[in-house]
Amino acid sequence: MASSSLLAPFQIRSFRFQYPADLLTSWGSEMENLILGWYILAETGSVLLLTLFGSLQYFGTLVAPMLGMAGDRIGHRTVLCSMRAIYTVLALLVMALAFTGALRPVHVFIIAVVAGLVRPSDLAMRSALVADTMPPDRFVSAMGASRTTSDSARIIGSLAGASLFAVLGLGRAYAAISAFYFVGFLLTLGVAASANVVHLAQRKSLWRDLREGLAYLWDMPSSLAALWLAFLVNLTAFPMTSGLLPFVARDIYHVDQTGLGYLISSFAFGSLVGSILISIAGRTIRPARMMIMFAIAWHLMLLVFVHMRDPFSGSLILVCAGLAQSLSLVPMSALLLHGAGAYRGRVMGMRMLAIYGLPIGLLGAGALIDRIGFTPTATLYCLLGIALTLLIAIRWRAALWPLQAPANAR
Image (cartoon, rainbow, N blue to C red; front, side, top):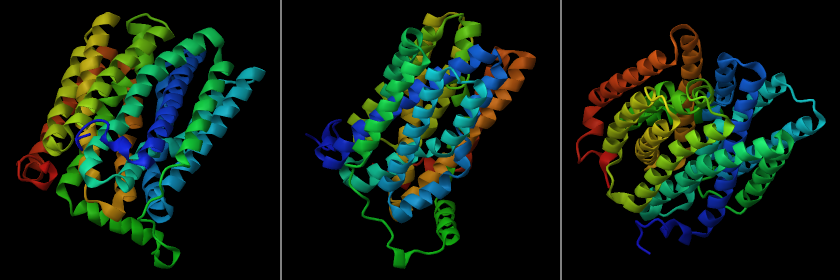
């Protein structure tokens, strides 16, 4: 197998454990998000509460740098295992409340707060763990392959979640989610430990570790630009395809939770295709250029999507939007992690901090939709995203655009 092929990362034993662990965890997470989002909308009928629920799941972005720093100090595998144990316990709690008939929206919001403290850092930890265990010549391919776990989960997990919820009810659906989380936890135990763990005698103060990570990012213009772009797409693009999709499904397209599952799956299918393409292309891509160009394409596709008025056309456009999203975000992660070494956890922790743009964008969209409607709000978000992406590209042009720039190294 060539080092640039999709299957090359699976020659590494650790990746053969991590891939199914990440896959099952992603399936459980996508099922959970769809089921609880629909539950909140059905029980309360409020789009504002729906966006609040979506925002609470990203509350932990504020502590993501600390979790990243913990990964650098005690090992990314150790932190990831702890997080996945928490997912399992919370899912079992929801299952128990559902089976006893005691589940209420307030319980869902409380559990969303607790899960939101750790869930945003899951992608960061799994990416850092890939960088720890993968040879440099297979790193980009492995990042693309790893990304397929979350992309495929949005297809299979969303459809499975919608079907299980509709056919079996909330309690039995959460029994499956709990099983996915638990098996994912067990498989994570088989991943190789990081070789960069700092021994106790060598550890510095927590604040000094954090300052060193911030100094590293500040001295890397391409990484700084990538972080700003990450914040921007979470602010303007992700709200359209995450927290607001239940509203689009019910109030714009007038479909049920199964129709919502198809919308989510369409976006995820495009993302999956993009991740596979990057995994196959491997080291032939130009990360910084791709990151910028496809961020603009992503917003353009969403601008078309928000003007569609039937679910079939909307689904087709969502496939294109998902493709552009993956072709922007996977190169972004590769750019940030390449050469980060002992700073990987802190770098990805700061990357996850950029996700805080999503709850801000969701809450802002919820308030604006109540006043001016969905289409004007979404159009404003897309145009703002395109304009600010161009501004980032111009501001850091010397670090992002030249072919000879380190950020575009193959």
